[in-house]
Image (cartoon, rainbow, N blue to C red; front, side, top):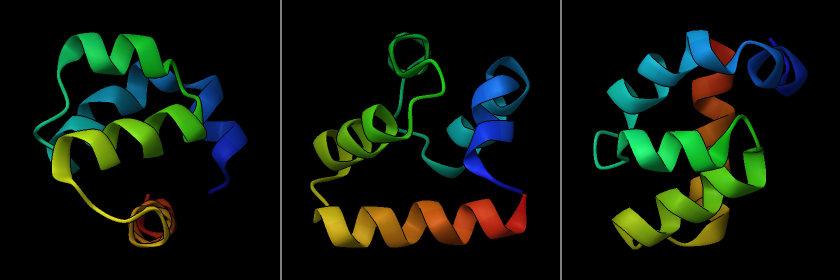
Length: 65
């Protein structure tokens, strides 16, 4: 799966994103609106994780969905 598919079906994937990164709120997910950079930024903000680690986590999650 590629990010364009996630972005195009964001409403479908919001629950899966929140299941993976539970600290993200519904409001966070509405703001992110399928934008990968916004997602990475919110994960960094909520979890205090380094950008390269967040990108790796997103890539890993993307390969599984």
